[in-house]
Length: 257
Image (cartoon, rainbow, N blue to C red; front, top):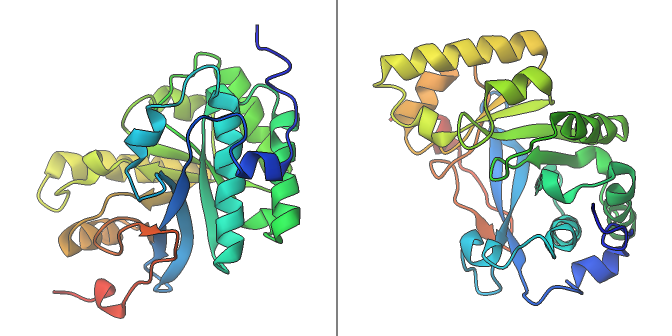
């Protein structure tokens, strides 16, 4: 049974300072671009070490004992930095499903941080990370429903990899579906991938979900997916994650090479 003390609401200042954790971290931001408007739709907050070490070095410290506090600290840190940087786009934050025990309690720190730092909650997207297996899909559906009721957008991250697959999609519909980069790599050359992705896009359209293509690295991948009707893209082709800052995109990204 979950320790109720661990689930207690914590203050946003307490979480932002990482109290209760024996490691420190910060964030980088990678843009999600809208190819139709040629603008930045959102920035995804990505965990980094204080010297821009990769996320893996931070997640190596996360365990069952500190998972809840780490998840809360990620939210408040992302919101604080986004506000300080003057982010005008949506802010996309990954959350760990197994760290959310009672959504009405776990969301309080997020709401407090949004209010304290002046960041509108309607600009926040919560992404379900694929790195954890969720056995209780009813619980996860309850989390997603609650977040949407409170005005947050929701997303399934890395669809087609890890634990984010058709069973998850059948049970839970979010506002956004992010297609995994492995499924999209060299899609301009792979007919099988094109057929599969077209099918997923059709399903998402019928479910009212917006598709984001992740991990785009070439113009050819971008063009092939745009021809399939995808408008939102993320990947090194457009911009790498910017450490504690906001990346920019150039008009040249959208032009044929």
